[in-house]
Length: 375
Image 1: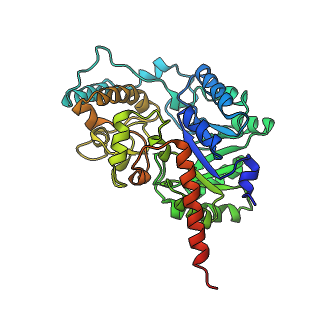
Image 2: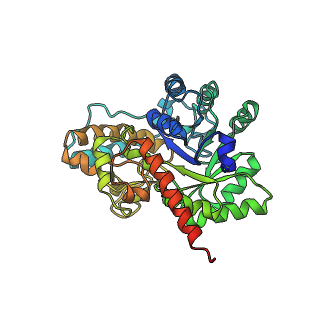
Image 3: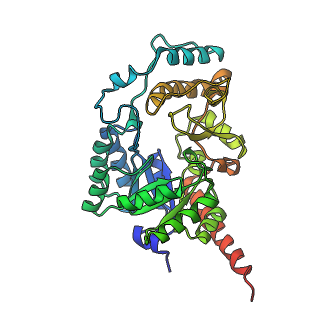
């Protein structure tokens, strides 16, 4: 018998794959899992193109979209333009970035570019409207309780709404808000994460939901890059796994080339929770960029979300280009969101093969578990 969550979402294996790359999303869905496209960085027009491409590739198989609408951010409720937001970035911060680049042999641009405010939630409703115009089977939100308009849209269209949590009290708030699926994401995860490990967080969330009388499914996330880890999460009561980092070194991924090489060589100790990219703690590869923003005497204080993201993203994209060209200073600065599971990510593989290995490893783990029981 298929697990209930597989029946609910029409998939063969309860492996959910978050990726910013449409090719990964389609490959995982076609392999029997559930791909989820990270949609926040796109314009509404770009998102429509990406989802239309996925629709063509998956032929009706299920997939979802993830739209980050932060609960808290600089300028919330003020209806600020991107220009007005960028005006809140002090000149001192621009000067600090210029010095940091110069110290690494990178000439500052004539005019420092600032990124958009994709993490401010200002396009969340438009992106949601686009996503809902496609046959998605899940809409997910991180960084707080989903806005009412997302939950309402999910109910109207019969699309489950998922939310990521990093603490048991957050799970309770999500249930009270009316979400349909919880992703319990431990501190091992790449990107924005809390401080509680996956092994502790998953049973805490399950216990909290049980006490609240809720039976909504919980996916485990954080450091899960193998089937045996997924089996351990299911043994704790999770309905399946939500994964992200493991897809960054697949053949289909669009991860910057030098960053891929860094990931293949990294150990599980080569990541750090840093606010240096977005303004909120997010796990990523250690580099001289993250060192520069660490909260210590040698580091520099970061700006709140989304100002830090607006300052950092264009610079890091430029660093990625230079790193791929062999620039040593850029290579020292290069970083990207990835979890502690990076220590087990040692080879570039097709996404379909990663799904197959997950299934085989999962089945082997469940057999070991079964054989450990007394006769």
